[in-house]
Image (cartoon, rainbow, N blue to C red; front, side, top):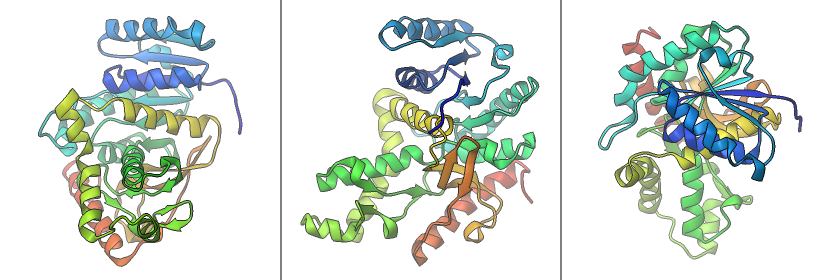
Length: 317
């Protein structure tokens, strides 16, 4: 793994941005962290709070400022945007957040350089496609957080069901980061033991009803958290930190980020989550996952949901 001096700019210090900044600081993944927010006092407060813990962690340069302070950033993480409210879907946020994220990207790119841009604002898949079309940056440089968090939720729920170490569970959620996402049941396993066989060995039922229940809980997880605490923050902060770590350390990790998938599995011109190799160049490969017939059909349904919104924005024909 490689290490080098790195600078990261975080745009948006709400609950998600603050959780990400905290996780990033604990792991000391970058040398320089710049916090930017429309509420400048909020950004300054977050920077101060993080700096006060550095004697217990190690040296980092953490500041708050305007967009000019983002010059020279290797990675820009965008968490700014309207929050998802109870009863609201991620796609409901589209018209509001597309303007916010476009404005941020325009200001960042005026500074020069070609930073890797990571988008966490929702609806993340459509916003990732929008930035890809409007910035002209290569697709490896614009990464949506995709279903990295959803896959983590999936693995956690399976581990809990099977009473096994969550790190031994290998399973992906792909497609839209939203209500049409799907679980790749056919390839899921626990340390190379196919999931169905592992369920049988643990004497746990593995019926279609149980699989549907688990997937629905994954899809509903954000809504459940929002109903209880107002927003999701900690887990998505950790998920963003994991993506950044794979880039900075050039790990070549496989993560289900959102990226351009046109032509893969005969998919249309959309961005959605698929297993991707993540390294110092961003998305270094998009992997064509083995899918059964039903999974293939459901993936296309998910892509078509995103395609309709992309057409509404005039991003595709």
